[in-house]
Image 1 (tube, rainbow, N blue to C red):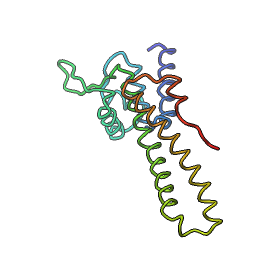
Image 2: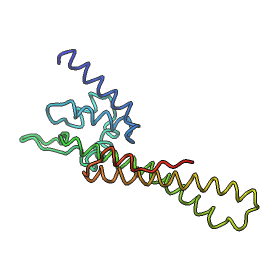
Image 3: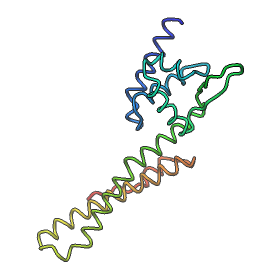
Image 4: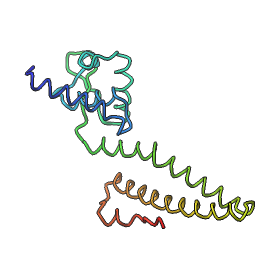
Length: 179
């Protein structure tokens, strides 16, 4: 293989592995996806293990997850008994999946925490002293503002994931009332 092509593939594959955490995936999963992304033909598990210098078990587990997400698929090559894998070329599918996973792992738990904290404050204000009620009122107002913003972001992400248009109006409609 041409040195420049190999260097480009290696750089891309390593970089995808390093930034994978941003998308909510591990290093090997990012590298496997990048390797299939850079390939012009389906690859076997052994091909990928050899190129990435990873164990077969690690590769198999991560390939299974990528298949479950629907971003790669198993293919057969006539006359060959090995399993081959190729990229699903619908890049939106992977972007939507990553957005959905990030929303589920990060935004939804934060919203749940803020809602539980706000509910706890509302339910127990009667048992607080005057000074505690003042602090609770400030805290609750801030929580409610942050909940409103987070719910607006959640609605925007839902629109995006369902293929609806997300415009600057959609974004500016998210209330940012901090004071």
